[in-house]
Amino acid sequence: MSGRVWTFAVGAALALSACADGGPESVETENSIRVVGSSTVYPFSTKVAQEFRNKTGWNVVVESTGSGGGHRAFCEGIGPNTPDVTSSSRPQKPSESKLCQSNGIENVVEIKIGYDGIVVANAIDSPSMDMNLSTLYLGLAKLVPNANCEMVENPYETWNEIDPSLPDTKIEVYGPSPTSGTRDAFVEISMEGGAKTLDCLANLGSDDFRVAAHTLREDGHWIDSGENDNALVQTLINTPTAIGVFGYSFLDQNTDKVKGARINGAEPTFENIATGHYPVARSLYVYVKGDKMGSVPGLHDFAMEFVSDEASAPGGYLEKIGLVPLMPSERLDMREAVAHLSASNL
Image (cartoon, rainbow, N blue to C red; front, side, top):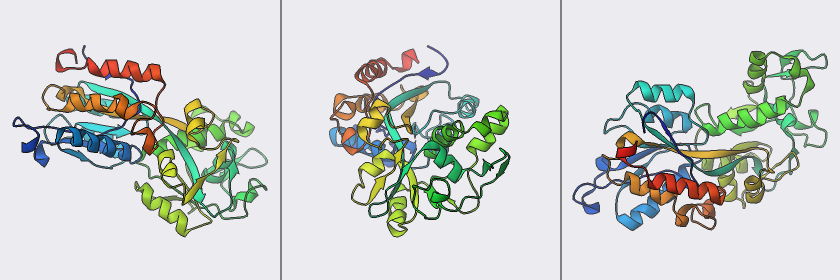
């Protein structure tokens, strides 16, 4: 097999381990498999890394860089100082694939590990929010249509100006930075989805529509919060009138502190994400350098760890920390595909 390798997998995440020739006991940091990427996938990557290390004693280095930052570092080359794996909360972009190829990375294994929802949440004691995609677009887009279907700078200051059923509170949304896959997915699914519901935007050409749908406000109503979702949860606790945008797993792990808004009538629950009823859901990925599969000890074994039943099946340790598993047929297909990966067939 030549060129890129596209494989589709199940509910696990990222992280890897490496062993030196002398076995796990002789492993040092510089010999470890290096994992970079999505802050959303980071808890899953870390958990897989911990479980694998507990079983083998091999070292793992996992860094949260954001999806965009992870792809850039991953695609720098195949040298020993470049990452072996990156995680991502959205698919690798064509421009990133081109960068990998231009730097001599011929084989990239894409592993779909499971699903996640993007939630709009606020502090547990704050008013509940029941929103739809058009509300999110009108609240957060830089340009919105006026009564004459002319695109103007967003005039909305409070949520109830858009929907009288919502609280009379300032539109103040803390969300991921431009390097985050969560932001990419939120814009692609929520903002564009909301824009498509508005008749005025149907008259725009494709380029103008994309600008209108994908450009967030820059007037202080949308605030970039970086890649640290735990810090974002604390911000919401300290700012009860604000809302935040982050992955479902962080909501699942902080239900005593924050609560998710209904979107198009659906709550951000495990079941609604798994069945597709929750409208703002996305796939999560791991990308492995197939070029290193035969030269980095532990790489293939770790790939098998995160597609194992223990990790990624329903009831596995990744589901317990918030990952929504793939359907059984997808998961089994992925495991079989990873099992047959080797340096000889990449």
